[in-house]
Image 1 (tube, rainbow, N blue to C red):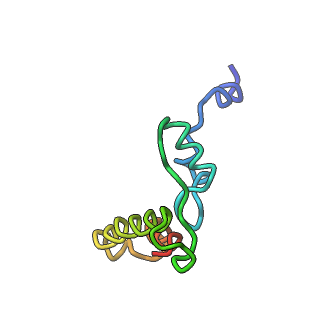
Image 2: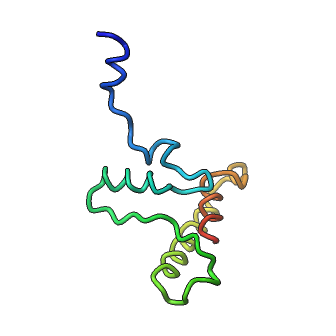
Length: 100
């Protein structure tokens, strides 16, 4: 069997685990979310709420999701080593994307 056939039969990992499913600005892109939902049926994963807080209607579902995410993930910042808190890590990028 040739190497090409072996490589073509090998299953690639899901897009949400690879760089093509991740947004360079942080979090997952639409392809990554779709891939995650395919791997995990019944999942309610959604993309980030990137709307500025001033543009969100107070009390809306998106505003609640955003504030909940910011509260959870801002706590992770305290657990992070100062050497890992470069501003270019995945956590910093996600917090920036969600306008936290």
